[in-house]
View (tube, rainbow, N blue to C red):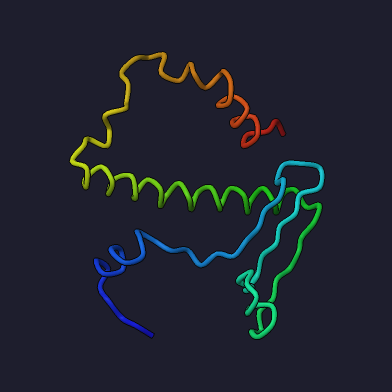
Length: 123
């Protein structure tokens, strides 16, 4: 084991690491698949280490919760990385915010509308 400071960690590795090993396939479809466990999805995990995983198929509620957790984790760390990028580039991280009351109008068209339909399906 190697010890270091938070600053050394960020400069060498990045802002954060999550130790979550999951695969989620079609979480809102008719036959969602979740693969989770201690398995690192590597050759040594399969051949040398005592690692395992479980495949959960067809359980939409479990798949939905795993997908939400994955997106929340990404969003949390992506925001922190964006703030660091902004500071490093000496720019205002909030420069893209709009005071226009119609700023969300774009959410009802094109790719954004399709993404919202995927992540927020009708119950």
